[in-house]
Length: 163
Image 1 (cartoon, helix red, strand yellow):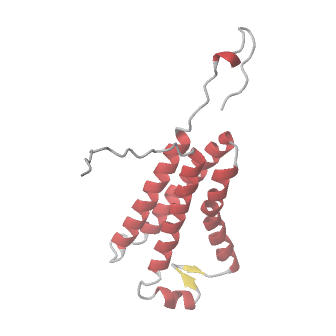
Image 2 (cartoon, helix red, strand yellow; image 1 turned 90 degrees about the horizontal axis):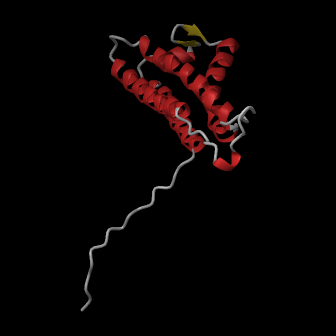
């Protein structure tokens, strides 16, 4: 007969680099962004409008397509930029681009106030803004390196720039 002992199996939670958190958040944001747009195609009349060359009240033109692609490219590129930019540039870029995406995300729900699909857009925008807030928090609270005693600078000399 074997004796069983109750042992707690503690799982290790490794530290995730800020860059990986940001890239994952931008990826999640892109999935929300795309799926809200895809599901919106199921709204009655949307596909008919697209086939007629109109999105919302805007005519589908090369200028419209370039503008739409530019707006879509920003979060797409942020996935790779979050993993490759140096810390300081990465932090600033994420703060700027995520801040710009908040009003753009909210714009999607503005035209739907009082309409039957309003809750769909409000939910989509709320989820996108939650992910953007997470990005802003990660970038804002980016860990800083502290100087060790071996790298301290004698008085009267300027300290090297730290992250």
